[in-house]
Length: 135
Length: 391
Image 1 (cartoon, helix red, strand yellow):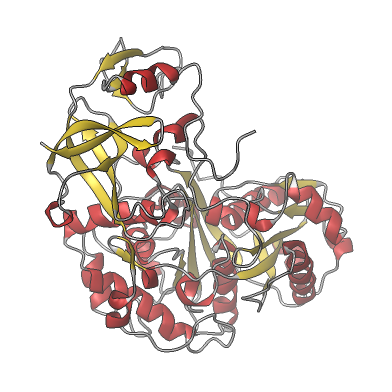
Image 2 (cartoon, chains in turn brown, green; image 1 turned 45 degrees about the vertical axis):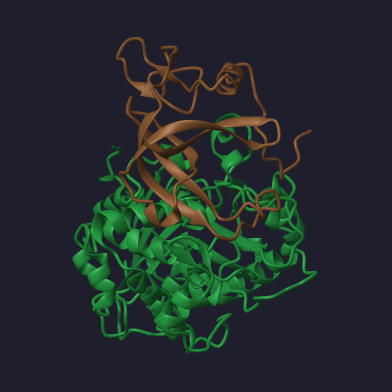
């Protein structure tokens, strides 16, 4: 039974390796073995080509900031008290986009297209996820 | 892309429409509001439950208090016996989607009189779910843990649009100010006191660059419309505008799947709606544009082709959506000031009907002839576009 206010990932057979890698501070993404194109979030098949299965590859962690928002007031009890925090759309140099947090960057220095690198943070108790900071 | 050349242009009309005057209804179950608005919309059309053979309402949000299969439960509650049912849920665009589907069903002979209803106590009903876009399962495992919310999703689009095209916060704020001006004339609008750009910018920042007053109101309300064939419409009490064009389009659910956050699915649904109507943006003089947030309006005006790429800030600043502007929008005060209980598409369609009947409670254009209505669902996740007018 999953509560409707749950925020912790309900890992499944496909995604468990990704979270295990994040625990080891490695960022995995998926690659289409035929075209070499990468995809995130992880899926069992290639989006748009469900006849093919992706393979896991490790990302470099180099990225640019596509967009961001500084959350000053969260409606979610689980996030209230963490404000301000920065939700970001991050474009990895390999080509996939991730939802993430920007950390350790002064808010006034945030700019779209700024260069980023991955860091790993325990964003909730027991959950390590990729975050990004200035390159 | 699917061809639209067989779209049955003008073959169905919206012959009844009613928006609940409720805005704050603590303790009122949404099914009560469904019953109220369906009764009024049928009365408006001069029809009764006995005439109804089709029913559509979206699969329920928790705030709509339907647990599951609520189309069946609402039909039961109201005493409808539909032989055609549609529960399509594409968020705030659902009602527009239902209109298009109903029109196709009527043209195919599956039904003749369709009631479409919506009710939600988005403000007062005790919600089992907070404002997360999706749950932390499947795709949501990679977004929910970071605290993505509805407002943050739209804020991300706003940040990128501002970066790419220089849109200013005060230009976004002007959208809220204009909505409030129209709402000031609407006796049922939730907020009617005059608003200034400075007040919008001084309201608390929720998720940058969006302030509290860049966000829609949160109300308890509902609405219903009645769609029937053009032939049957001649026998109804009010008749009503015909549906001349329709398009719907899916975008994304996870924000990390929205490749270009400055272009919404309305580019797709709008193109199909215009093509099916044989019209273009230049033909439209008034529109109802879903306004969950100020940025929703800005992005949609461009996606629909009303404003050239990147120029929506200047369009807003020059009064483009004002009473004397190129395209007055949300003439009842919109979701930003009048009514937004969770899926505003219903109220946008109703205001489109009222505008064409000459009965807008807000700002009424002299003989508008055509009205475009655009719904946006989810987190810029889907859109549906209707063009209403004389058949």
